[in-house]
Image 1 (tube, rainbow, N blue to C red):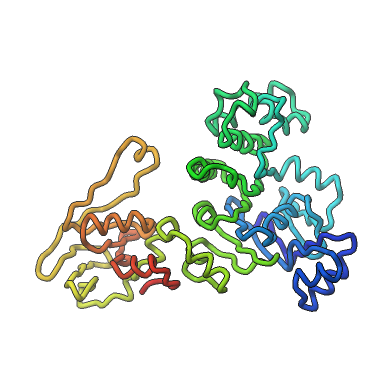
Image 2: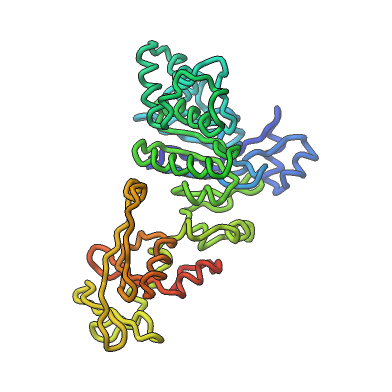
Length: 401
């Protein structure tokens, strides 16, 4: 179900946007419109649905329109044409036509925002910064401070509650900004390049923390970024913008494997597929493999095969030799932190889920020196062999077969 539904949206920064809109309809470029009218087209004909609980990343270079689009969702930018529907309980509000009272209600109860600059008030303690929005809502001090402390614990800053912002590092200050947004307890969270000013290691850590927090909070998040690796890492969907327009929208793997324009393909060429692609996308599916009776041929050059019974793997081997199998399960973050590791013996087929990521699958291939067998719901789903990995690493934009 869509929580945010953007329909043919135009944003023109001008006191008289109608002339610019007419020129847009005639096919003039943004620069031509600036030259003729001095009006700036921030967003042109954008349509986008954001589902409940997803992280949708608006991605593009500076000036592409991503922040302009984000800021229409909470009414910071005016809507010149089109519709922007936000679900609010049992009703749907169109920001293109809503009054000031409705807009205030959405900003107070429905939509929160995290800015690139931390925007903390230097004279307030960390705790009071987090509780500030609740104070503006008229919530009593005891209740709002209890809620703020709970959110600080969530981001690991409870010990800094009574410190001033300047006593915290940049990454810690950004955590305070996150806690402040979470404290408002709104379902929709807008994040405008919140990690871009941070050092790479701190940035990666906060990305991981956001992903972990989202598993529990299940907010609907629109996240602006100019970093495609960041977008691919955290986004459940990505909308790539160029010249104020959305030129491609889809799941991360779709964006990487099937860029629809030369602009997107150029972006994708510089990404690390290890962080994005998974077994389901890369595998050669079972139905495309040669079958000889109950045997499925995994690699005819090396005489590797798997034998099935009602779709289930019974045995696998090489030539006349049957080789052992080991099931592989992904370790949780806590298990990895405890130093736990899984070992796959050389010469043993590893059996994993199609949800395995590419990095882990390559490690299994390297350790076992055999293709990775993929099984789902007790049935053989496909195989990951060297060709699948090579095509992905070389940037071949199609599902390997």
